[in-house]
Image (tube, rainbow, N blue to C red; front, side):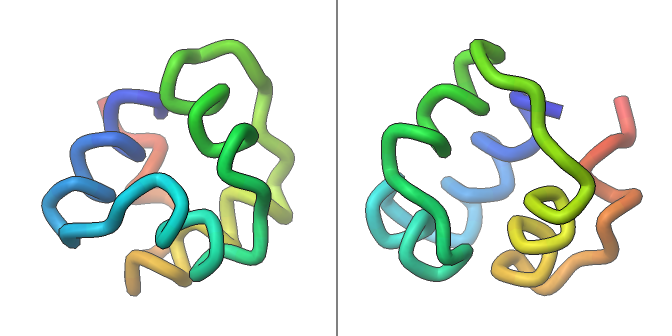
Length: 62
């Protein structure tokens, strides 16, 4: 999931800080997700997917 989040965030032209604001999450948390340092709750997967205008399952695809 971490690679998908980074790839999709960059494709949407978000900085980590701007993306975190769009998700309602902290910038360091987004960075930790992208580096696979944090596990992500379902609630936060839904927030991230919503900010990217995707369905949550799309973040979990290999």
